[in-house]
Image (cartoon, rainbow, N blue to C red; front, side, top):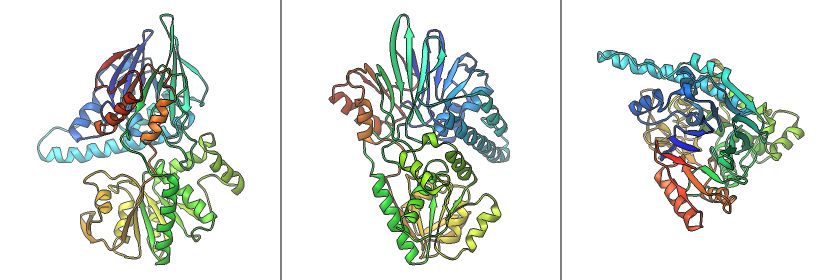
Length: 464
C-alpha cells in the first residue's frame, strides 16, 4: 500500500489522504483548505490527482475541513461512493449546502473588487447546486458494521466521539497474501463531553494515521466548564442582564443547549429563556435529535425521563425567521442568546452584539478559541472600542471566557489513543497538526518506545 498525504499534513486543515492498494485508489477525507485567500483558492480548486481515477471515498465526519471539497471532487469527475456513518451523511448534506452558499457569496464579493480593478471574474470553487449533487453519492453505514469498499479492503467505522456521526475507520486489508489493519482516527473526541459517546480506542492496528492537533497540551475538564458556565449565567441573571454567546452552529451550540437544560432542570439556575438564533444551528440540532445512536447514556436517560428530544426543552426557542430574531431584542429580562458565527465574524450574532454590547448588565461569553484579527478575538481580549457593521461601539458589557469545551482530544487522550495499540502498531503517521502540536507528541511517543512515528510532509508518499 502507498499512502500519499495531500492535506492536513503539517497543518490542521484540508484533510485528504490517498491510499493505493490492490489496484484501487481510496481517498480518506476531502476537506477544504482554509488559509490565505489566494492559496486556499488554488489548493481547493486544483486536486493533486485526477478525481475520476478514484474508486472510493471514506469520510470520518462532516466538519468542512474534512468534507468541504467533496462538491468540487464530484464536479471534476468522481463517480464512486462516499461512505460515512448515517449521522455524518445527514449532517454533511446540510453543511455542504451551507458551504456552497458561502462559496458563491465570497465569489461575488471578490469579483466586485476585481471588476473595479479591471480584472476578470473568478469562478466559485463550487456552488450550492454542486453541493446538493453530492447527496447522490453518499453511502451510509452503521457503526461497527464492516463494509467491503474495494478488493481485499474492508472498512469498519468506530465512534470517534468528536461530533455527531464522527468515526475512526479501521481498514482490514488483504494484499499480496498479507493481512494487516490500518486505522485512521479522523478527529478524536474527548471523554465526558455532553451529548456524545466517548471515543473508541484503536483495536489491533498495525498502522495508525492519527490526528495531533493538541499534542502539546491538555484540556480543562468539561465538568469545570459546566461550573464556570453556571456561575457566569447566575451572576448575569442577578444583575438582570443577558448572556450573549457566539457559537459554532454544529457541535458547540448543541453542547451548550444540553448544559443549560441540565442547569435549569436541576434548579441550578432560574428558568429563563434560551434562544438559539442561527438557521444552520437549528437545522443541525434537529439532525442531532434524529440520531440517538450517537448519544451517550446520560443524554438517552434524559430523553427517557423527560419525554422529549435531547435538544428540546420548555425554555429553549429556535428562531428561524429574521422577524423572530429581531423580536429577541424586545425581550428585556434575563435570557441566554446563542448565535452563529463562532468567531463573531458574520451572521445574526453581530446584530445581538450591536444591540447588547453597551449595557453593563449583559455578559458576552466566549466559549472557544478565537482566530487572530476576528471580532471574537477582540472581544476575548476585552477591547473597549468595538466596530460592528462599520459602526463603533463602546463595550460596556462584561466579557467572560471559558475553556474545556474543545471537541478535540488533548495530549493525554492522544497518548492513550496510541497506547491502545502500542504492542502491535508498526508505524504511526501524525496528521491534522502543526509543528507545535505534533512535534512534542512525536517526541513523547518515541520516548515511550513506539517503533516509528512519522510527521509526513504535504505530498509525501509512504509505503507500508
